Length: 331
Figure 1: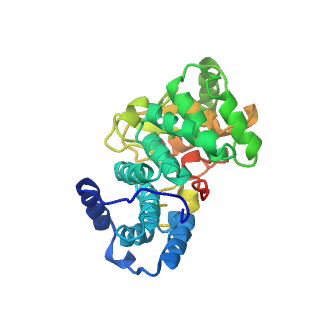
Figure 2: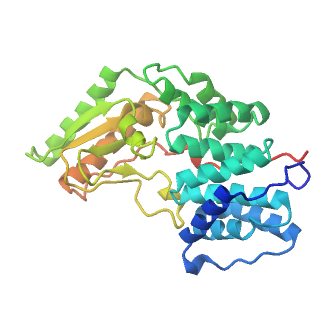
Figure 3: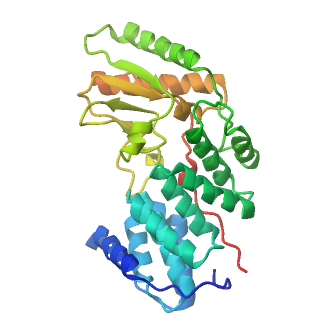
């Protein structure tokens, strides 16, 4: 970013107001970093961009400290880092504001465009997210998470078409088969039958109960995403003030890992499993069966408060929007 021509970014009133809000998000114990020379500032921002998910409060503080640096490149890098830190902290609207400002100042920044795409995705803006990913993948076509996320977006835009995102998932898996899979799709009837088999097993193992949950199956959590929840949740408790939600990034640790892989608070009677999100993690029938078993085990654990003997191994849970941003190429 030090060599690319960038506009002389100025913090307008709206961005200043947003930046003041970001500062208020940072607890005092995380406000330790100080600014330095232009070279050290860029190095500091790079370091926090690589590791910020482990300490997003401190990363946001560092970004904020550099927002008014004399160098436009440093201010743009600060906005990109701020967007990432805000995303990990769950402030998705602010993450979008920061990324949009960075991209407006430097339309060639792959990092800024990626941060904007993931913020839009998390807010349920699937059409605008796809537009950003279309542009991104024209310039960084070997960025596997970009292909995987565009695949997820296409699934959301055409949930009834099992093959809607096949080529994108294939492209991601070809670039990095250890992390990305081509989802194994089955019919809704077959998925329902697999869920029913697992429920029957748990009923047999744990005994029938009047508190056994009512389990539904839907393709995607459209209503939940409209309410601001994670587009990637595998299952949730419906019609209750205490709603179950997956936190797929808890395995990464750090300040944001405040939940287990899936947590629920008992108190509702109906659970819903989301077929497409479960399938997205699974490369074959065996893995899909394991993941369905895992999800049913989790909801039984929540519904029956059964904290023993309901632990099952499911599919590795990688999500494209949690990936590091692609590198910007100096012009």
